[in-house]
Amino acid sequence: MAVTTVAGVGDVSLARRGHDVKGRLFHLLVVLSVVLAFVILAALVWDMIAGGESVLTERLWSFLTSGLNSDPELAGVWQGVKGTLQLSIIVVAVAFPLGIGSAIYIEEYASDSRLTRFISVNIRNLAGVPSIVFGLLGLAIFVQALGGVTGGRTVIAGGLTLSALVLPIVIITSQEALRAVPSGIRVGALALGATRWETTRHHVLPAALPGILTGNVLALARAAGEAAPLLLVGAVSGVFFVGAQGTLEQILHGRFTAMPMVIFSWARLPAGQGWNVLAAAASLVLLVLIFVMNGFAIWLRNRYEQRW
Figure (tube, helix red, strand yellow):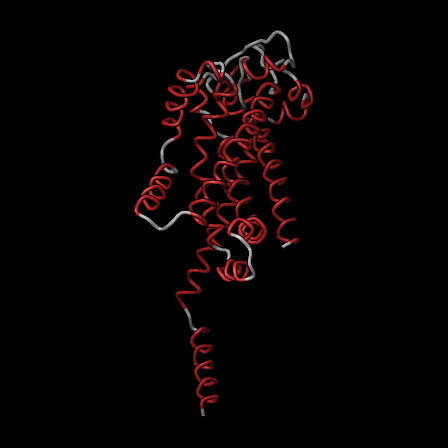
């Protein structure tokens, strides 16, 4: 009788599932949202391609390898690409280890105290703070207070400012990835005699790594597209020239710019002189650059998913 009852309940639930109007409506809304997002992205990409077609078809290579110039026929994005890559390297080296380490401590080691909850709430609040506020923070701390270490208005100060900007995002996404790991994995490892660190290092972290990498991809994409904080910490928005190209001193303490700054500078110049075409082409270059960085991170995530 029990089996019959269970089977009957299962049949009833399956029958009701077939008439789940709210569920189907929600599924339809999700699909429409995804389609709408792809349509907007496609329209944006098409607008950039159409706007920068003359540059992309006639002098793509020189546009990618040339520096900033007051002549739109000679201007290129190399200095912006180089600056964006330098800033991204600093963000990866600073924000990612600090963010992942903080998430591991909060989720795996810290007790559920009032102080821990207070810290977690403030981290989530920081994720919603406007980027210009982090620019003011970078100006006050990394440019002025620690100017002797960072060199003032340099790429180091810009990278540290962007690291502070994305650090809450890295912590939050890493926490969610760690929480998604089944508690049975921790219990089983501890029951077999593993220490807390061995459990975290060999079992929890590998299982959470795909989710952590996904969050880091989003954080890196935001850092690569920010312009407001860089305006305050010294990124150049116009033409500049450097002396000894390629030296470590010039790279770390010289003047710098980034792709968002280049696009911002060209977009506000008179459209009739051809700067709007350069801005559209530079926007497409930035989009492709972010796709490449994201693609590499997604490849790493897929490798760890297969290994796990």
